[in-house]
Image: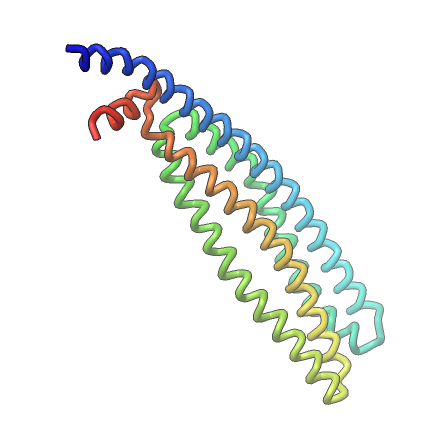
Length: 212
């Protein structure tokens, strides 16, 4: 009888604890999500600016420079500039929709949100890993091209290789920053999933503790 009384007395405490943990998990996730989406917006603006500078520099070298090294450098600058500008603009255009969708789902069926957002962000982090490997290859390839061009006294090849390696390095730096940001956000989603099983009043936590 005493055991049942102790058990009955523990239930409200467990319910309160579960509710508090769930609320703390929600608040922590909301802070991390706000930081993530704000940083995504700023990162997109930075990438657009980098792309615009690359495009402008490439166009200027191609149109006005007579130096064959600059002529060679113009082509990777233009190619990377177009990619950077497009990627930054696309990210910026979608950020508000992604943020609203995340807030809407997190405020409704939280379990569904966790499943969906985990899949999305895991896909993003895998994509970053592949892109970074490609950028490493481009850095190495550009540096090798510049060395070979210098050995063969081909200034256009030197300029092409140096600009290719530089543009790939700049883009990789941006991608590594965005990759780390996405990884932190994924960890926040994962931490939210731990509290998803609590239910709105912490009852699931109570059941798990009382019925192992």
